[in-house]
Amino acid sequence: MTDSEIERLIKLEEKRQKKAVNLIASENYVSGDVLRALGSVFTNKYAEGYPGKRYYGGNEIVDEIEELCKNRALKLFKLCNKKCLHRAKSRWHVNVQPYSGSPANLAIYSALVPIGSKIMGMSLEMGGHLTHGQKVSMTGKFWEQVPYGVSKKTERLDYEEIFKIAKKEKPAMVVVGATAYSRKIDFRKFRKIADAAGAYLMVDMSHIAGLVAGGEHPSPFPYADVVMTTTHKILRGPRGAMIFSRKIKPLGHPVSKWTLDVLIDRAVFPGLQGGPHINQIAAIAVCLKEAMSPSFKIYANQVVKNAQVLANELKKRGWRIVSGGTDTHLFLVDTWSRGISGKEASDKLERAGIIVNKNMIPFDTRRPAGPSGIRIGTPAVTTLGMKEKDMIKIAEKIDKTLK
Ligand SMILES: *Cc1c(COP(=O)(O)O)cnc(C)c1O
Image 1 (cartoon, rainbow, N blue to C red):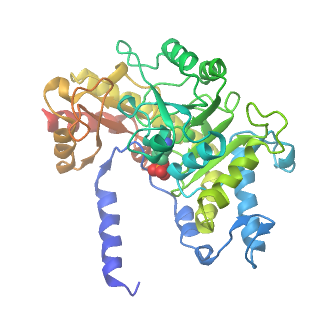
Image 2 (tube, rainbow, N blue to C red):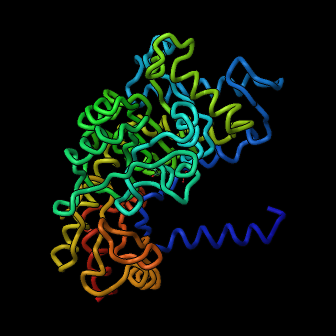
């Protein structure tokens, strides 16, 4: 590289990433193939529009990439037959152009939820995402959030309570998904909740998509109307997102000319975005193929095993785990129960070479800048090949560092 300043920083970051024990639940290490696609000449190309309907010339190869990516996406989540030769016949459509998860969610709402109406989402303090209608996010300014959360006693989703709220508030969309919830989510129950409100069911599976693909978490597809996922978390692809939608008429508009997939495609482009990042779409295609391999299943399984062992080992050493454990790739530790704020804990751990993030815990009495807990996740260390015995060592080190 001739730009030595940037070259130096890339090298430094490579070194930092190799040295640290990365327990950030939303991070991972992509393959060389994903990086190769991301750094390819596709970044030079403008391709506003969709395959076969572009506003620029020279897109034959780009069209092939985007079609291949869409086929692989539907295939990975078992939404079309083996070769995906009859994608038109699938009941699901996929859009692979969203730049990232946040704009993808904005696209879904702007396609299906009238401005000013209600979106029901898990509140940020309970483990939801900013883009599920939180006040400081534009999604909370354009739409009104009806928040829901976990039960104080079990620290798990309180489906009965959520049902009651939905029935009373009648949101236009129920959003399911979290960034800091460690238990399996029952999508069938959420379908009933959405139906009770006459609402769409949108599942934001960004955090768990890799577990769904690997068979470690039930799939939302039998129940949801729309499914969004980022591609860069357990799924181990480039930063990016995909929106899956059912080819059904909009709720309350049975004679509409358009189906959800058409409305969402239009919301992504030209509604919110211009030219898609074709290099990113190429890299998503690569990660989707990798996720179909037998080794990905083994990885997904190990991610969960590692999280469970790590949580248990910390529990044995006296640390309170929110909800008592985990079914997924992450969990929250209530460090404040032993007098250490989440910020202090994550700073101490960082100095010891362990990277986590501070995190609010349900019913947190402290502020977001210095919350009561930390979030710990195992996708990245599992990608590096770590197993149960390594988790025991990490638990020992965390315990020693924080005590
Ligand atoms: C990560 C995440 C997002 C947002 O993705 P960005 O790519 O960071 O914009 C949205 N929803 C959930 C549940 C997430 O975990």
